[in-house]
Image (cartoon, rainbow over all chains, first blue to last red; front, side, top):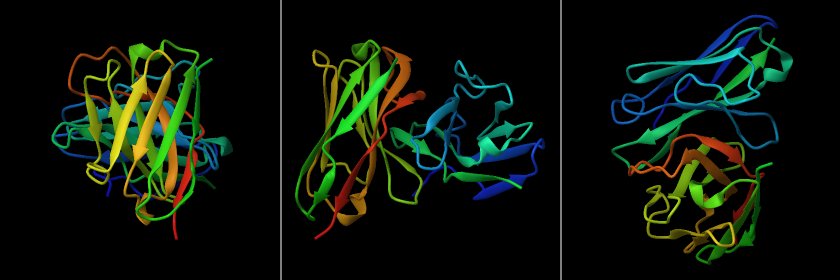
Length: 110
Length: 126
């Protein structure tokens, strides 16, 4: 089972903002950098945010990440229909000595 | 352009073995840790295994420890996953994934997973 907890779904109207939380513990998020991944329907995941708040080349600044203690947050502003996807947080768990992902959140644009 | 091409998926009976391969191109393969991440149909992501750039450090999820073995060939730019004693719960899409960190020196295997293959489906069923 997933070690990191995310809300199953979030939704908002086009142009609005959504936030997705990712809750962990001191052995994973509290001690390591967090990444976020976007998975569009029928495709492989794509890196969206790394090192808590950095964007890879080509990722628009509508996507932002933050971390506080053992929790992380992904924020999407100016929501577009193309943002409808599943979003996963991920990091390293120092106790398990393995990678861990969140439970996943489905974003719906109303 | 980074490309990761998985192969070896298919239908296999419970208890049997399967070997996955991933052909990598478009980056300096022996600079990066590599991983296998799986996703059961309709479910979330699960990190399966990772291997450091020089094969000195490998890691496995508890769910596959003792059954799966990861390896790499830095001459042929290839990643492998030997899966033994397969179970129905191993049914999933298996993704070959590149880690962004260049020659990581700590025991931490996963930093950020910056490129993913398209995945290969392994179905374990009688």
